[in-house]
Image (tube, rainbow, N blue to C red; front, side):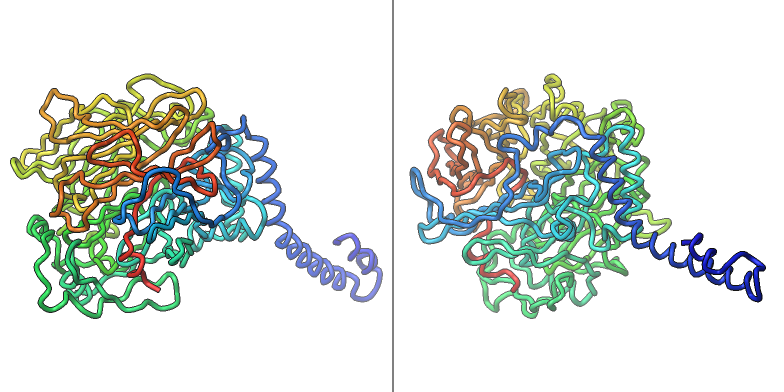
Length: 628
């Protein structure tokens, strides 16, 4: 363009105004070139990104094969009860989240990477319907529109070319090829129901608000933002919360049409004359219900939110964390009121960034896990993922009083009591509580003596397998200890939902074994007694699926909504099981109390359900009580 402009202007000095016209045309050509480059830079960088990413591709991931492989289409249809009968108490919807890439990945892929897809089995009046629906995140919508993957994935971060992929990913953001103003998460990990909203959770982003329709289809409402509670709204939320089993229901104003708007303050409180809840004896354990001093001065400023928040059934509060590996503070923690507003927030100073997949809570504490699966970018150049287990670093567990005032911003020093033990790792906590006998904090968890991401691909030996352990923290002395509860290998622990944050007797875990025909094999469900005497294995029951049938996390659904009715293990376990030889997926329902091998019911589903992550059960009342 510059050459053409010079030719049109003639040689410099060839006539009156020659230099002037040449300079003017040259400047115009420069503007035109810059404009052209601006328009073409995005596609150029995107093309380079695809080429480099594909060049860094290894063997096709095992997490794209077999029943890990995604299903490309949303489906809805009637399911068939193949055997047994579904208990009437299970009217509602069983939901399970998991990764399901909409589009074929450009390069490397890890199980953690896929778009969120919620698999729902709707049960009502003896009829059963199944549906699967994508969590329609900002990332999902951008990639669907482009017709190809656009965003960096966890699986991409291996090998020297990954460094260039990282730089090009940053350039795509800067040039507007990808828009991260609404986050870049997938919503693929877990689900929670809080403040009359169903939430899809992924630790790299904020939650997404979903809604279950009457027929079981799941629609995405939008990404959630968290605004700070005022003293008045916090007081109303605390006063109006009705623990489980109380006849009165929390009523709240309908939010604005903006899906990012937090819930409005409840209009009314507990129904006049309603009987005291039999669950309300839990409230006395907690010092956190009520708007004490120390409300945050602003909303949640972070862009991450744990996939495993904890909801205290006694107060209706949700405890959560968010973590970052890019800049301090590497961890933030908070508390939401029963109405979904931020009532506490703390910036937590950590000496090094780590993966923080789970957290815990008790009646009086929020539990932070700072475990030595450390973010180390140098691992990328070695062809490994950038999180490495550093056994020379301690496993640290922090306790934050839930009633502590907010502490955020520069110089913030929240009240955290830290406990240290020799290195270990856990992805998932079963529960945490304060032991009435001695005031200690107990944490039951699926524990790894050491962990590497290689062991998700290969059998790395006994100490890299998860088993049930207990951590004991004594706030009065600062002492900490851990002990093995059972040698049975497993993960994805669950408890009775009314016991979260409070003393628990039972937990159930997916039983894991090495199998030749699948990467991670959940071959059944194990039941454990957390009050088993020391020295005695806590395993008290086990269900095994038929040969070559594999599941995942089972969701415990109590028989009685009132936690004072029946025993803690009186209920059912619901789990999706894939029957490899038949090539079909089924919903299995088991008796959680007896752990009989024969399912209470087996439902044949009209579509395949890929192996996934975490689930939950919504009651008929919760479905009706959702925000419109």
